[in-house]
Image (cartoon, rainbow, N blue to C red; front, side, top):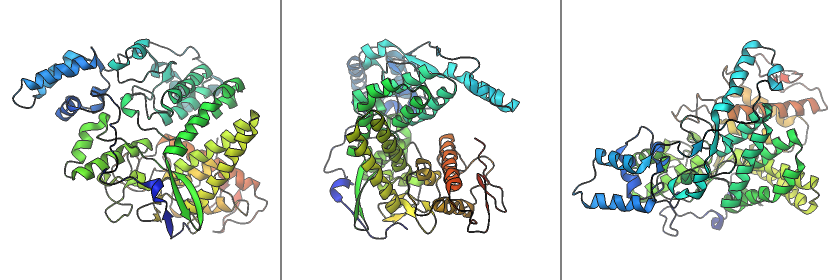
Length: 522
């Protein structure tokens, strides 16, 4: 059970509610794409169905000229500009989104990767073949003009071609790219996968971290740190040790960013733990969702609006935008609506699990490269992380890990798919082999989570938000499957054949009970 009595080192957590002790910067420094009256007027006029459309448009001429033209236009108008005036202004000075790309087809795409021949079911093979073909339509290469005339674009330049998620997402996104790269490697597209990793390394050199996505309005927020895991996946397939050696310092640099800028010091049970959270210290509405953020906050005080807009960007940094997971009501309880988003006050199980995997992999990388001191550093960090995950997130009574609410000083005991992340990261120790596996299975059975026909839901809360019931996001399903594989390995490795505590028997990779169970078919 998580400790009932906690002490928070205030110096590590200070972020004043009224913003009086600090003036936060906007999402980026552009007076067109991130802040300013032009952005406000265009987005609040709702010229487009999606606010992202405007901030993805290319400027036709220098932004200073555009801003001067806007000032001249508003100076001659006795009232607020009409929707038609704004529409004409945008048509005059902006090009439609997508001007930043040139045509590109992945050169390493092939018709028949080996993975397709391993699928015996004809329908599944056809489906996988169609998925494999999507790489050709989702590939993008950014024009050199974006590098030489960066002021005209919201696109962040990266040198190598890449794969985008598609739809309204015309640019790379950080944690999405982990699963994209895993797919590219299955499709034997190692050159494209390496290029995407090189792009992220380029971004670390430029920003000292990896932005949420490939737009300037994402410049002050990141996403779950999966770059080290991307590198690990690539190295396992290619054994490209020279590439690893060349870039290990940049992998260290990203880890340092998270440890210097996204941490809280907690004293629990007489022990001091350094754990990670999400927090984006940038002011104002999100440019890509500007009117939604303004409308959501319109009944709040000025200070409350500033707090909410910070919290929404922080929720976006988590990748879970949005979820009841981040709601904390006026009583400090995990409850409420989107307006009650308080992401920075939640210690997330999954973020700390991702960093646990970072530490384990970085220790391995440095050990293999002969950097014994660095390897030892990460081994010690891993040991500390496992202790923190145990002391802060593990609930012995229920047999699962939970996020921790810094306002109520209690665990949030609602189910979220992220509860299983420490199992996926193997970020725990146990006195008796298989003990944790048994407890987790019992929890999942008690919550009736093993017999959903379309995957384990993101949560059991029907809040209407994307990252809640009934949705079951693919990245979470993959993490759960890998967690289950880890659990199964520990079951098989257990040196006993005792019965499961509800009387069921261990049979191979599945716990046999009176209800259907998940079977490992990977």
